[in-house]
Length: 490
Image (cartoon, rainbow, N blue to C red; front, side):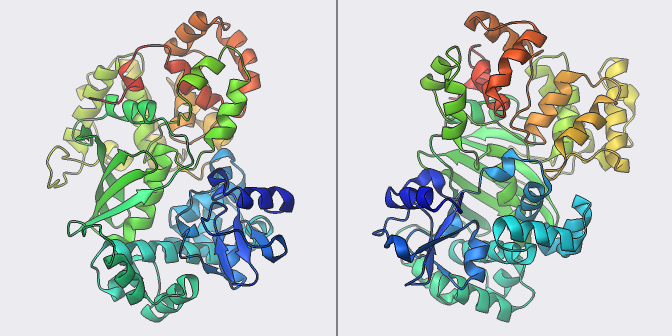
């Protein structure tokens, strides 16, 4: 979008928050870059130039605005709506892969050479993987500086910097303030300091956001010991590269309140990325709802409660296992089966608030389970053990960087995997916004009640007009049934 100057100018002059994260405005006279909704008086048109990423702005010598804090913008919705190499690279960079594995590790995961990835990212984002990772490190550093009491040296290494000097230089360059000045400014605010060891932050999103189905689904399907709904917040454990974490996510009118407790602050970047992915916070709900509203039978559902998101997962392998456990059983039964696996094979964790007891077991931990001890039909046991084996040997990949169609082709070859299981994994684990469940009982009931075709083939043909947002159409169709997944818990 940043190449459409006229459209960008209109967005800046109207302070349209919908475009935050789509592009950034750099002001030639002040050498500052802002989000489109920056509250200051818009600069003259001739003094504006536009970039596709904060990293591109920083490479061009611009610093972040202290008023609108463009580094806190929601991510571009393009990276979650596409499955090409650039989108997959951006999701991996968001997960901190460049910090942990370098550019060669990023390229290896995508199956390209480092030079090819560099060229593709430069062409589309105006910055290579190192610059994009550097911009993300700066944002992580600012969060740690402002929300924790960690010494600056610890902040530097937790944010992914290789040295304290590089950390200091980058923070000064990006924010035009020394790290100590950032902490002093944050300390002047009226907000009380967070509990020691807990990082409190706000996760931004594009309005509108309807929390009912999002948090209702997560709470209704929560696995005891791993997830819970408490005091208006969804809480769960997180398995992270350097340790584990516990997160509490609370819906607010203009943001999601996030409280993170991490055993190692180096996991902050990935933990934030996982939480944003879980809640689908980088979506563009206006674009989605406008297209779905064009169908006269869907329009009343969209108008009644716009801004529905697709509830996802923090770990693709975990969700695949849970999808198999949930085949042809009730939500309560699926939770019971999952809770037994957690108790037997999950890693215990300490939750100061109580309620959460384990991490969900990894495929490696499940590889040695005795199928005869599973209270499942024999065919379902085979499905589960085959899935676990494919995840352990690497023949099946279910990460945020996965090619959606390739994963579908791999899943459908596994015994016991039909279209419903494949599509629900594509929707909630892989994040495909066009995944569709025409055989789902709730969808078929909704179709009959609304006057849509009720057979899978006819409904799929009708749903072609909803592409590429059929996963969001599923969320609206599910609201026709009065099911707990559609309501925030009391």
